[in-house]
Image (tube, rainbow, N blue to C red; front, side, top):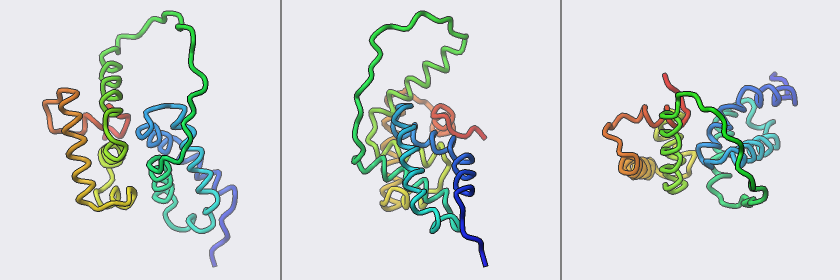
Length: 178
C-alpha cells in the first residue's frame, strides 16, 4: 500500500518545479511580478489537491492550473507601485543585441492574444505536443494549430523573421535550447 503524500513531498515538488513554473508564468504574463504571483497562486491551488494528484502527474496538473488561472481573467490586476525616478546609468555588457531581440520578442508577444501567447510558449518553448497543449487550454488540436499558425505569422511579420525555424522563438523566450 502506498504511503500518504506528505507536506515534505509537496515542498520537494515546489523546489523542483519552481523555476519551470515561473518561466511558464512569465511567458504568459510578460511581467516578472505577475508571473511570481501566478506561480505562487498556482502552487497554492495545487496544495489543496495534492493528496489526489501527487501519485499521478502533478507536473501536468500544475501546468493546467497555471494556464487556466492565467486565461480565466479572474485575477485582479494590480497597478500599485510604479517607479518614479529613473535609475542611474549602469554600464551594460556587449550583449545588447540579445537584449534588443528579447525586448522585440516581448513587445511582439504582448501583441498576441493570451491564447496565442500561451499556445506558442507551451508548444515551442516547453516543447509540448499539440494534443497536450489542447488539453491544457481546453480546446481542440485544430484550435491549437490555428493559434500557433496565427501567432507565428504575427511574430514573423512583427519581428521580420526570415526563417520558419521556431527554435529561435524558444531560445528568445527563455525556453529550452537543446
